Image 1: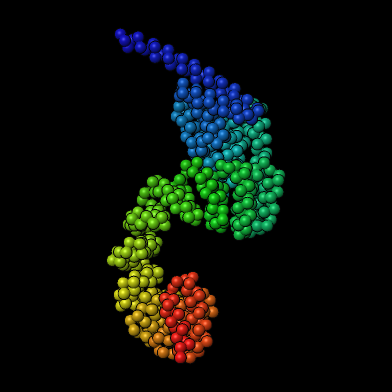
Image 2: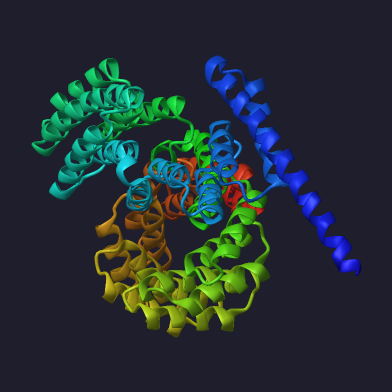
Length: 555
């Protein structure tokens, strides 16, 4: 009995809600019309509020979804993806609503999903039957936009002609619509003409002529956004990076939601203009609104924050990227690096290990091993873990020169000279034209008392790079302390000083060599320079230098 009483009450409530939804829908339409006539934001907001109320009272009215999507996107309250989702909701509510398919196709076209847009326009055409003139014309305009903005094949041109002609015939009795379409089509045909000629010039590398065509198109056509994009792309091809950025900025002044240009400008600023890091960050943050490739955008933001040395935001951005793609080795590696910069070494180790385990490429992973090994060696003091990590990296990439050097360095730090010499020899064998291996090998051989071999190594280092003050100084030390040849040694010390006038140790050694040769004044000069510089660098024991200086004048 109670159920029998309840059913009429539910029916009456539904009827009341349905009537309220219709009332709000009518108010929304009127506000929408007033907005289109007067472009008042008050009318726009009223229309949005009324459409939302209509949805609340009756979520089965298809029209409210696509009209609400249109207004909210225009006001910048939702992304293109959200607008498409709302229009798809309208289709799910009323699959036979032609306008729902047209609006969905329109937003897909804006998102440059021309394949999806075509599918929706075809559905609208099929549903409209003999009255599909408007849908066909919208399809032809979408195809023309695709031709103007992308590389297309002959079939796209033929489809454009077919839908344009068939739509024109079927619109013969719809004078208002046909005037609107022909007006828009004539504008698009002007764009098409400039675009086609410009592309032709580009194909034949006539960049200067293409630039003039596109500049004229900016002045003569309604589609400045397209041709500023073309000018930006052309400037990039011509390696005029300043003009590239400037043209992309002009596009975004016209349409701040142009996703492809936001990507291009962000990339250009990130790669060529480190002083504009904040602007690049702004571009990526706007791209987040589209909810496309979100993980990649957070990844790029992480690197930009690293450039700014903003460790906290860098870590946060990489973590957000990883939340979306936890098995991405590159995101794990970057988060590990960010943690290391923030001196959170345990967290860094965890993510470096994850990146290594995922191992997308042996050569890349060996570099990650090098970074992890450096943390074990330098920050954690775990020599065994560092050695194991470096060795694992070498197994992954036996041609990683830096890993052999790093392994040799850790053996040197542990004073395991034989293994250090072996690692440095491996590096020299791998790349005999690289100076670092010879220089480090020379130190290890000298520590092992292999004087002749150390001399050979350092002579080779100096031969490869005579501009390295460090190698010049060390070679001098071998001659002075190993061969007792102060005259030969002094030449190398003086060369080191000429290469680096602030090299404290080289002045000290030059003083020792000069003292050995009996050049008291020269020795005093070098010792005094060493004392003066050492007060800034604090490399040496000043008392020892003072003692040597005073001993020069003792009777």
